[in-house]
Length: 391
Image (cartoon, rainbow, N blue to C red; front, side, top):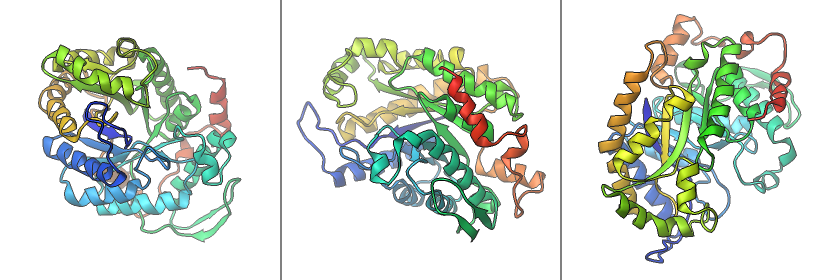
């Protein structure tokens, strides 16, 4: 099982010291955090994509491309890339370039974001969010799997004889996750293509997360990609850890109370009760997150948010050390004890996808379209049907 961290890249005043980093300091701190996570032995670093203050990561591929050159082992990902407002042609080019630069040590997480005004900023209509996600991803896949693409759709100009460059590394596109916290249509899309589904449950109760994940699992099996329990699932969460649980609580409380993402709302007692936020000792985190398998089944990736709310860089690095040194080894051991032998332990690696493609005779040829798993309907038809599902 993979464990890692993700960052939303917020610029927030430290409520204790009153220090507010500027954008340059925050970006450089994110780079330090990613390098430290690699050195500590975590599996994944993921950055969000935002185009408005108080967030700084507006160019994920620039950041991850740099990190590909200064890290050794960690998988570099997004959390998330905006499939709705980015041009799929640029996504195909930029992430294939990142795949080549990182030698396949990356994947791509797609989502619609949580900032409504981003749609008009990039000339899109928020009322078409689901339809944009469906059409743009269908084109993105074709650009990666077909050498020459003729295409027309609703939301961008047609393509005639277009070839996206560079071509995917070894002829195999990056692994893709679809992230959503509230839209069953996106869980449907992930299942449709046999891709991964990540539910970033940092503001939601586990009952809601379980409903979304279980819906994705059922649809994954429906489309013939494997059993429901073999679907590729990831979760997001957040922790603040000290060896003394009361010290953890006392230290994090002012950051919680002032954080723009959840301050001035529910109390920390309510938030830690109703969401995956866990503030306490390493053992408390192990116990809390170790119980999630009972609700969502065995899953392949757990990401933690640890660098938000104005927390000092030194504190964030200490959190990474506690995760990597004490929490992750225990959770990984427990995950392997529980995992059935025929359920994937991790998301597909680049090497594994290349081997599978070669076995199927697909490398350096047009890859078999995911539509082969469908039963006569278009992607739009099946994903629109998910509107009827309530999570």
